[in-house]
Amino acid sequence: MIKWRNLVLILVVLILAGCASTKSQEKQTVAKKRATSSPIVGDTAMTQSVPCTTPPCDSYGVPIGSQQDQNSRANDIPDKRIIYFDYDKNTIRPEAQIILEEHAAYITNHPNAYVRLEGHTDERGSREYNLALAERRAEAAKEVLLILGVFENQLVTISYGEEQPVALEHNEEAWQLNRRVELIYP
Image 1 (cartoon, one colour):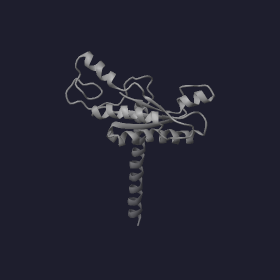
Image 2 (tube, rainbow, N blue to C red):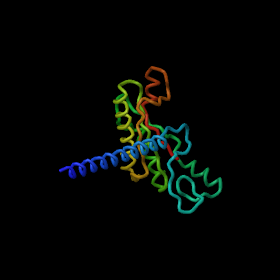
Image 3 (cartoon, helix red, strand yellow):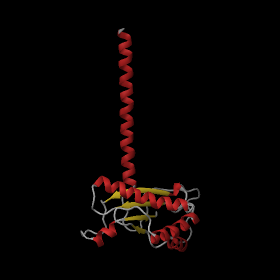
Image 4 (cartoon, helix red, strand yellow):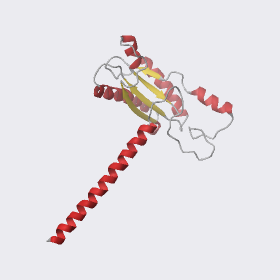
């Protein structure tokens, strides 16, 4: 009887030790994701890397040629990289549809390209509600890009909610600028 109790006790300790290491690994994974998904100011590179088969390669996984080749590829990315939304909505507006079509054409013509879709809201509403709304906005943009032929592995969504406003005033003009999805390229 005592042997069984000791055996059960040892098994419980081993299981708990295994769970503790899993939690530690999960915390490290979450920390790494936060580090790599931190906001980018302007059009600088994302921190994620793309495998390169023929070094040296750029962030698209394409061999690096002359400086002129790099500049022409960067100039191919559509200029408009922000789409806006109506208050409390995640419906894609017609002008946003056109912008997403331009990005879909670029991404499908550059199979190693990928884009991060960052969802944002204005300050109105609870933090939890705004995070969910921003996620729905990013997912709506992602869905349009998928329908237009972009592969899912080329898209990443992230929700910032109200945490990263571009306009700090408390009026409709500022709120409109904050209700957005930004398309961030490496």
